[in-house]
Amino acid sequence: MVTGRWGAAGAGAGSKAGTKARGDAAEDRALAWLLARGLVLVERNYRLARGPHARGGEIDLVLRDRDGTLVFVEVRARQRADHGGAAASVGATKRLRLRLAARHYLLRFASPPPCRFDVLAIDGEQVEWLRAAFDEG
Image 1 (tube, one colour):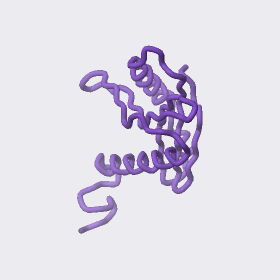
Image 2: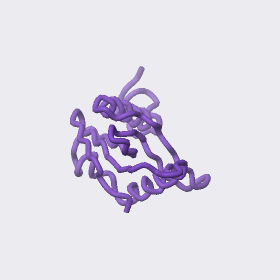
Image 3: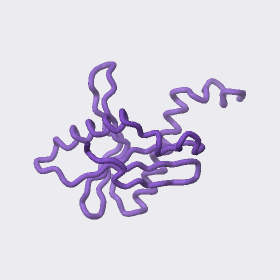
Image 4: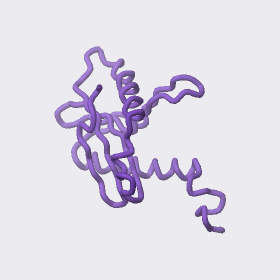
């Protein structure tokens, strides 16, 4: 196998396959981390499609906390904490999409449970759990 500037043969550092694999690995790590803290997985990668080319929202992890709260988790990972790190990368547009997807998700409940939006930020080996990182707005 040939490696070079772009990493493994045929897979550029920014390739979709490489980015997807890194994202999946970060979600796996985040899920294990949260399960170890008593949360229970309800759903993974809940997507809201808004048309063939428009981007809807996606919720990385939907979990239930011990008190019954439904927790919508955005997982962000960065190799380094440059430019504010993983947590700082959850901007206004991302929060809007998460809120939209969560509202759609909650339509399945006759009486929606209490819920919150958390961010699990992974910067290298450091994990930061931002509980109630933002509100429904």
